Image 1 (cartoon, helix red, strand yellow):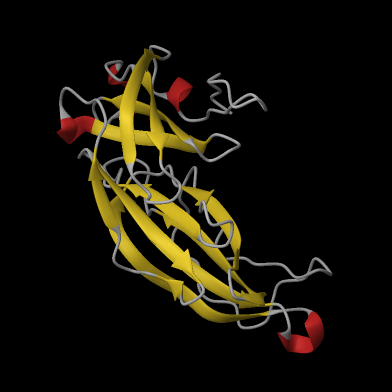
Image 2 (cartoon, rainbow, N blue to C red):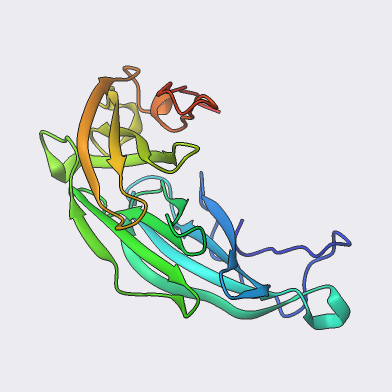
Length: 219
C-alpha cells in the first residue's frame, strides 16, 4: 500500500515509517531504477479521508534490495511529488526501452502531469499536457488510467460529478488518447460513455492485441 513494504521472506522491511489515517482505493506502482538494478521506486497515491477529500498526494519511496543482507531496506521514504491529483496513476515504458514515464492527473482540471524516470532518477518537474473531456473541469476526476500493451495509447476511466458519492449525478465515461512514448505527449482524444454510476468508473483494461477494449469493474 506504499507504507508497508515486505521483503522476499514476507517480512516487513526494516526502517518502516508511520502510516497516515486509512484511505481507500490507494494506487501503488513499482518500477526498477533504469540505471541501478538494486533500486526500486514505489509510487502511490495517498489520501486521508473518503468524504470531502477527493484530492490525493502523489508520493514515492525507494527500496534498495541489496541492503539488509539482501532482504532490502527503505532508503528514501514517503517523498511528496505533488498534491491534488486524481487517484488514477500509471507507468509507461519510454520508446527508448530504458526510461519510464510516470503519468498523473491534476484533479478537477484537464492537466495531465508526465514525469520522466531516467538513468538520473525521477525528474520532479513534469511536462504538463492539457487534454481530456470534462464539460466542467472543476468536477473532472480520474479513477483509473492504463496504457496499451505497446505503450502507444492511454485509456482513462473518469467521472464528472459531485464529491458526495450518493447524490447520483456522477456518470462515468472513457477517454482514449494516442500516447507518444518518445515525447510523453497525449493527443487525439476519443470519448466513450461509461456506466451511469461513480463506482463503475474505477477500473479498466486493454485486450492483449492493444485493440481498445475498456472493462469496467467496481471491484
